[in-house]
Length: 334
Length: 272
Image (tube, rainbow over all chains, first blue to last red; front, top):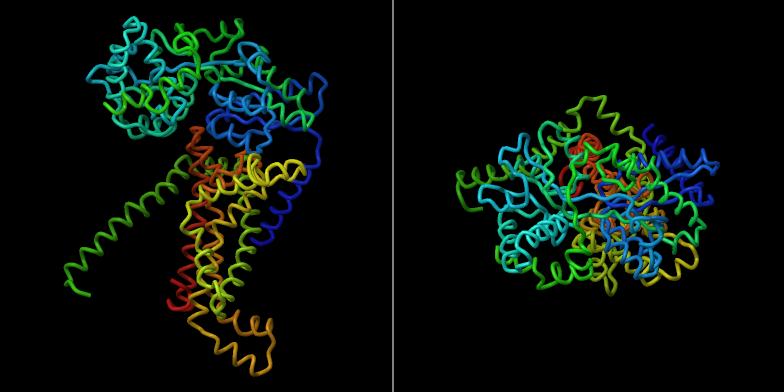
């Protein structure tokens, strides 16, 4: 009996594989970052319907999720993704440098090819018992911060840079004071987890710390899973714009003949319908009308960019995160 | 052994405490958490399309890998235990290599060979042969990681038994394969079953190597362990624990089968 059902299962999968390899591009693969699964389940469903309503053929969107650096690497090694929807600019740039994505990929879609964005915010315990309002509360002696290691977590890099950007404004670019501020902030982190998910576990389940630094887009997932009444979101006075860049992997799509459908798919993210789904999942969107509709979900905040404050990702990677960069120095001393 | 009853009790106590905290507590938590939102939610989470697909993929992988490694294990054990030839020790070490290599190293090594930037990458690309980020890659990686299990069980057993039975059979006129089927195989059957059970459990549970070569396409190249990680990262705790309890169940069944086997044939035969 058991044997029979195993064989049935085997046959079932074999059939599935056979039909998959024989087909025209009636499906495309979206390689995305690790926490975007439910978001793209919703997006894909809507796109498939919209596409068919517009007279297109039936299409299936496959999803692959992992850290976006790992995804970029996998695509270089042969993962046949038609589009990428990442949370790190540098990971798309890696693909562009190797010729998988157009060199001018940022020009191919509106808003520098970033249909939505988010920002590091503070997730505090219900009622905000420590009264944490802004970045300068994070250097208080009585505040314990949960933050993954900026060396290994893209999420934490944004938080780290946002704190640095705040300090640069507060101390008028006095480097010594800026570094002292960030160093104090880092010294309030009792333990650095390697990734965002591990940090969430530390904060939520081990109940360590007073504030978790993470993307605003992540906080809705955390509150949904662990209880909206247990945590409050605090949006600081200023934060760092975190783009979610998208691109067509032309090296793959040109071979598969899927460039058009892949482009349509990414353009769908910019439509009012796509933007609504993005906003419903905790992301800030570009479309003014949609943004207006979700205004009370996303408190007003002044955002600065990596380009403005740090002169671009290439510079920031070298200056802050490289070997002997500022981060290494601050961590070594804390 | 030196040391009195007090010393023995202390060691026993340490072992029990460690077992409780390292093994029993986490395993129970997985099962309890899996069922904590009710049996309905448990089966609902398991019935989710992608999780079902992951379970199917893991089963298919096991259906391919376990027979391969069983044949390989028998052949390897047979050659190593029953014959002497130059390089025998070396072969033995090579077979055991996957035990000592971290699975992630194995995965990356396969990428270096079959990946797009790898040794054979351009050739495979040109001929449209998909190995990495598809079923063949998952099977390759799993085969590597579980290659020693059957052989490791059989080699000591076969060495212990020596060649006497086979030689007797040969004297009586049996030929090569006949000897194997009628004499060797019955002698090793419980060790073989034991090796297969272990191999199967490991294939179903393999994470590191497969995670590198899978491409984690949901519903297609996510094996059950990868799906568990995905659900966990999605804040889908119920789904993650439900899927995890399936693997835990496999482990418990493996354990039960092992105990049953050992009871059946005695400690000496079923391996250590």
